[in-house]
Image 1 (cartoon, rainbow, N blue to C red):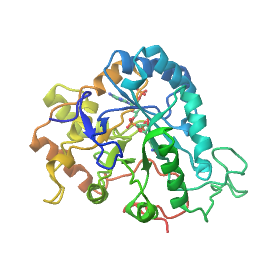
Image 2 (image 1 turned 60 degrees about the horizontal axis):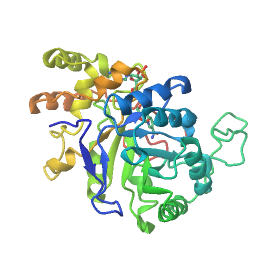
Image 3 (image 1 turned 60 degrees about the vertical axis):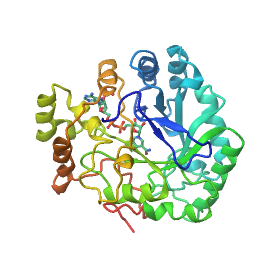
Image 4 (image 1 turned 30 degrees about the horizontal axis):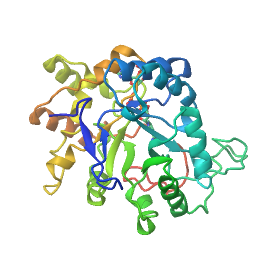
Length: 327
Ligand SMILES: NC(=O)c1ccc[n+]([C@@H]2O[C@H](COP(=O)([O-])OP(=O)(O)OC[C@H]3O[C@@H](n4cnc5c(N)ncnc54)[C@H](OP(=O)(O)O)[C@@H]3O)[C@@H](O)[C@H]2O)c1
């Protein structure tokens, strides 16, 4: 079976034994405030979602809060993720308190370091400071292991149930893992048929870190939803292209080395974003693809013209991804 809206995935590194996370969550990046309230309410109350992916830097969390309230779904039944932005890596608890207030909640389910990049907290903008030459105002001396320690502390205080990272490669994970007393529960990274990141997934499996797929459809104006192979499969299954792509997650196994366990291969959380009710519903019902068809989608990124990363902020520092290393 592929992921379904009711599938949950175990978090092996969670400090609470048996903790799980819903396999499909609603993304909210670039969801305009005036639309995200209804999108969140619809996803939770009508489409069966129980997982919302937020971030301070999306600047729409107050509107998400209205959606959470409007849905009528109980707080304890919803899994809420948010992320500490790069200008707050030395002020983690301050950022968490802002998130809690914005979302109108008294704990977060999963708190992530949004990027392994520290930006000047006293720069020319509270979220996106730049230097006079227009580049990001990076704090090159920041020690990520200190941020992770602050994450462990906010978890111990009960302000979040789980902690994790986002946009971390093996290179940046190694900046926090050696001194971590709580390992990251998840790593939220760009993952889709054009960027399957097999090698990083294998490494995450070895550390018990569950991958979360962001931009799973290929983000705004995605060419993946128009790809001939995806469109052909959509016709074959009588489904939308997005249902084929979401169905591929959790079933994509043919490229993994033999030791990559089948169960772990299914443990990818998918975070499709939409503000359109019909699409929110469509995305909650992924296609159940055959192994043969999964393999066809697995092969797409072998084509160098297709293999691509869509989310690539011009940080100008080493991030350590195989396809993106600006060292
Ligand atoms: N951690 C990070 O750094 C990071 C980075 C990027 C994303 N994320 C998270 O991952 C989430 C998803 O990524 P994303 O927003 O970049 O992209 P995505 O979910 O891959 O794609 C969203 C785009 O696809 C459209 N869409 C959604 N469902 C569709 C369907 N069934 N048929 C056709 N088009 C459809 C949406 O349009 P409409 O909304 O207009 O319907 C929107 O333009 C984000 O919202 C965010 O929560 C995290």
